[in-house]
Length: 182
Image (cartoon, one colour):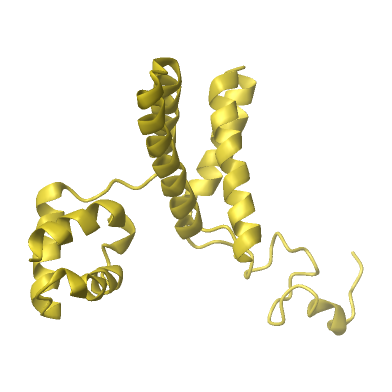
Protein backbone atom coordinates (compact mmCIF):
# COMPACT_ATOMS: atom_id res chain seq x y z
CA UNK A 1 0.00 0.00 0.00
CA UNK A 2 1.42 3.33 -1.00
CA UNK A 3 1.24 6.46 1.08
CA UNK A 4 -0.29 9.55 -0.54
CA UNK A 5 0.97 13.05 0.14
CA UNK A 6 -1.21 15.04 2.54
CA UNK A 7 -2.20 17.46 -0.24
CA UNK A 8 -3.96 14.63 -2.09
CA UNK A 9 -6.38 14.05 0.79
CA UNK A 10 -8.10 17.36 0.13
CA UNK A 11 -9.27 16.04 -3.25
CA UNK A 12 -12.01 14.01 -1.57
CA UNK A 13 -12.92 15.64 1.70
CA UNK A 14 -10.82 18.08 3.71
CA UNK A 15 -11.29 16.31 7.05
CA UNK A 16 -11.05 12.82 5.60
CA UNK A 17 -8.20 10.37 5.75
CA UNK A 18 -9.82 7.91 3.39
CA UNK A 19 -6.78 7.47 1.09
CA UNK A 20 -8.71 8.85 -1.88
CA UNK A 21 -11.29 6.07 -1.73
CA UNK A 22 -14.53 8.07 -1.91
CA UNK A 23 -16.57 5.00 -1.03
CA UNK A 24 -15.12 5.21 2.48
CA UNK A 25 -15.27 8.98 2.78
CA UNK A 26 -17.66 9.99 5.58
CA UNK A 27 -18.93 12.89 3.48
CA UNK A 28 -20.29 10.46 0.89
CA UNK A 29 -22.00 8.11 3.34
CA UNK A 30 -25.73 8.69 3.83
CA UNK A 31 -27.06 8.63 7.35
CA UNK A 32 -30.58 7.79 6.21
CA UNK A 33 -30.65 4.22 4.95
CA UNK A 34 -34.13 4.47 3.41
CA UNK A 35 -33.96 4.79 -0.38
CA UNK A 36 -35.15 8.06 -1.83
CA UNK A 37 -38.17 8.18 -4.11
CA UNK A 38 -35.86 8.57 -7.09
CA UNK A 39 -33.72 5.58 -6.08
CA UNK A 40 -36.87 3.49 -5.75
CA UNK A 41 -38.04 4.62 -9.18
CA UNK A 42 -34.68 3.76 -10.75
CA UNK A 43 -34.66 0.32 -9.11
CA UNK A 44 -38.19 -0.30 -10.37
CA UNK A 45 -37.09 0.59 -13.91
CA UNK A 46 -34.44 -2.10 -13.74
CA UNK A 47 -36.92 -4.60 -12.32
CA UNK A 48 -39.47 -3.82 -15.06
CA UNK A 49 -36.86 -4.18 -17.80
CA UNK A 50 -35.62 -7.49 -16.40
CA UNK A 51 -39.23 -8.74 -16.18
CA UNK A 52 -39.84 -7.61 -19.80
CA UNK A 53 -42.72 -5.40 -18.63
CA UNK A 54 -42.40 -2.92 -21.48
CA UNK A 55 -45.45 -0.73 -20.66
CA UNK A 56 -44.32 -0.25 -17.04
CA UNK A 57 -40.70 0.33 -18.05
CA UNK A 58 -41.84 2.96 -20.58
CA UNK A 59 -43.93 4.81 -17.98
CA UNK A 60 -41.10 4.77 -15.45
CA UNK A 61 -38.45 5.81 -17.99
CA UNK A 62 -40.62 8.68 -19.21
CA UNK A 63 -40.95 9.99 -15.67
CA UNK A 64 -37.25 9.43 -14.98
CA UNK A 65 -36.48 11.58 -18.01
CA UNK A 66 -38.89 14.27 -16.81
CA UNK A 67 -37.19 14.30 -13.40
CA UNK A 68 -33.73 14.57 -14.95
CA UNK A 69 -34.93 17.34 -17.28
CA UNK A 70 -36.42 19.25 -14.35
CA UNK A 71 -33.15 18.86 -12.47
CA UNK A 72 -31.19 20.31 -15.38
CA UNK A 73 -33.69 23.10 -16.05
CA UNK A 74 -33.72 24.22 -12.42
CA UNK A 75 -30.01 23.52 -11.93
CA UNK A 76 -30.86 21.57 -8.76
CA UNK A 77 -29.79 18.14 -7.59
CA UNK A 78 -32.42 15.43 -7.70
CA UNK A 79 -34.08 15.19 -4.30
CA UNK A 80 -37.46 14.03 -3.02
CA UNK A 81 -38.94 17.52 -3.31
CA UNK A 82 -38.02 17.79 -7.00
CA UNK A 83 -39.22 14.24 -7.71
CA UNK A 84 -42.54 14.83 -5.96
CA UNK A 85 -43.13 18.13 -7.77
CA UNK A 86 -42.30 16.58 -11.15
CA UNK A 87 -44.51 13.54 -10.59
CA UNK A 88 -47.41 15.71 -9.38
CA UNK A 89 -47.07 17.80 -12.52
CA UNK A 90 -47.19 14.62 -14.62
CA UNK A 91 -50.37 13.48 -12.86
CA UNK A 92 -51.92 16.92 -13.39
CA UNK A 93 -51.06 16.85 -17.11
CA UNK A 94 -52.46 13.34 -17.53
CA UNK A 95 -55.66 14.30 -15.72
CA UNK A 96 -56.07 17.35 -17.97
CA UNK A 97 -55.44 15.17 -21.01
CA UNK A 98 -58.15 12.77 -19.81
CA UNK A 99 -60.67 15.61 -19.86
CA UNK A 100 -59.78 16.33 -23.47
CA UNK A 101 -59.86 12.65 -24.43
CA UNK A 102 -63.29 12.35 -22.85
CA UNK A 103 -64.56 15.19 -25.05
CA UNK A 104 -63.17 13.35 -28.07
CA UNK A 105 -64.57 9.99 -27.01
CA UNK A 106 -61.15 8.31 -26.75
CA UNK A 107 -61.76 5.81 -23.97
CA UNK A 108 -58.67 3.80 -24.95
CA UNK A 109 -56.40 6.77 -24.23
CA UNK A 110 -58.27 7.54 -21.01
CA UNK A 111 -57.66 3.98 -19.78
CA UNK A 112 -53.96 4.21 -20.69
CA UNK A 113 -53.63 7.51 -18.80
CA UNK A 114 -55.43 6.12 -15.76
CA UNK A 115 -52.98 3.21 -15.67
CA UNK A 116 -50.08 5.63 -15.91
CA UNK A 117 -51.52 7.80 -13.13
CA UNK A 118 -51.89 4.71 -10.92
CA UNK A 119 -48.21 3.84 -11.48
CA UNK A 120 -47.02 7.39 -10.77
CA UNK A 121 -49.11 7.71 -7.61
CA UNK A 122 -47.18 4.79 -6.07
CA UNK A 123 -44.18 7.15 -5.84
CA UNK A 124 -46.07 10.14 -4.46
CA UNK A 125 -46.48 10.62 -0.73
CA UNK A 126 -50.00 10.01 0.52
CA UNK A 127 -51.93 13.28 0.78
CA UNK A 128 -53.93 14.51 3.71
CA UNK A 129 -57.49 13.28 4.10
CA UNK A 130 -60.27 15.77 3.35
CA UNK A 131 -61.26 16.39 6.98
CA UNK A 132 -57.69 17.13 8.12
CA UNK A 133 -57.06 19.35 5.10
CA UNK A 134 -60.23 21.32 5.75
CA UNK A 135 -59.28 21.76 9.42
CA UNK A 136 -55.83 23.07 8.42
CA UNK A 137 -57.35 25.50 5.90
CA UNK A 138 -59.84 26.83 8.47
CA UNK A 139 -57.01 27.24 10.99
CA UNK A 140 -54.80 29.10 8.51
CA UNK A 141 -57.66 31.36 7.38
CA UNK A 142 -58.26 32.31 11.02
CA UNK A 143 -54.52 32.81 11.65
CA UNK A 144 -54.04 35.07 8.63
CA UNK A 145 -57.28 36.96 9.20
CA UNK A 146 -58.28 36.60 5.54
CA UNK A 147 -61.76 38.02 4.93
CA UNK A 148 -62.21 37.74 1.15
CA UNK A 149 -61.02 35.88 -1.92
CA UNK A 150 -58.65 38.78 -2.61
CA UNK A 151 -56.57 37.62 0.36
CA UNK A 152 -56.33 34.05 -0.87
CA UNK A 153 -52.62 34.51 -1.62
CA UNK A 154 -51.90 35.13 2.06
CA UNK A 155 -53.65 31.88 2.99
CA UNK A 156 -51.80 29.84 0.36
CA UNK A 157 -48.50 31.44 1.39
CA UNK A 158 -49.14 30.51 5.02
CA UNK A 159 -50.07 26.95 3.98
CA UNK A 160 -46.79 26.60 2.11
CA UNK A 161 -44.92 27.41 5.34
CA UNK A 162 -46.59 24.60 7.29
CA UNK A 163 -44.86 21.25 7.85
CA UNK A 164 -47.71 19.49 6.00
CA UNK A 165 -47.02 21.50 2.81
CA UNK A 166 -45.44 18.61 0.86
CA UNK A 167 -48.60 16.59 1.37
CA UNK A 168 -50.98 19.32 0.21
CA UNK A 169 -52.36 19.44 -3.31
CA UNK A 170 -52.54 23.21 -3.81
CA UNK A 171 -54.77 22.91 -6.86
CA UNK A 172 -57.47 21.26 -4.77
CA UNK A 173 -56.84 23.42 -1.72
CA UNK A 174 -57.34 26.64 -3.69
CA UNK A 175 -60.88 25.52 -4.51
CA UNK A 176 -61.44 24.76 -0.83
CA UNK A 177 -60.14 28.19 0.16
CA UNK A 178 -62.40 29.86 -2.41
CA UNK A 179 -65.37 28.01 -0.94
CA UNK A 180 -64.46 29.13 2.59
CA UNK A 181 -63.84 32.79 1.79
CA UNK A 182 -66.71 35.09 0.78
